[in-house]
Length: 123
Image (cartoon, rainbow, N blue to C red; front, top):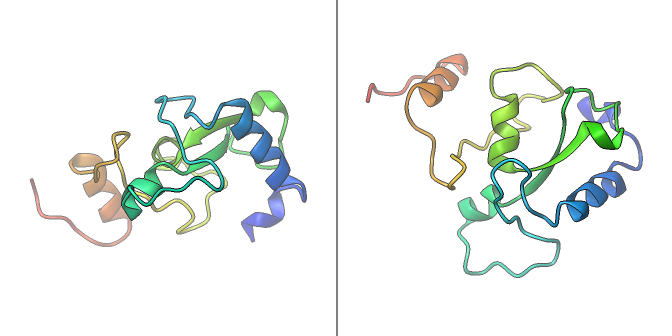
């Protein structure tokens, strides 16, 4: 299982990285949701897109040096993993959103759909 590759203190490590970033994505600058923050004004899709993740720059979850960890919103994190094999288990990062929170369309979305065995109508 992919979680076996993470250290036991991963929740504390990832929380520290997110706090150091001020809960703001280091790539796009999106302000993400802090634990306990009330978000009734956000749709489920918006909440997912504003979820903060911690990315391993070298795609190795065993390497938790501070310089290897970066705080990213869910959309940017997915962007780093979508065409690369890394520490992502099938279904772990399935959010298909653009950095502005909209659904992804176009060539990239069609390619991913084809890789999953589905198809999208040509645009």
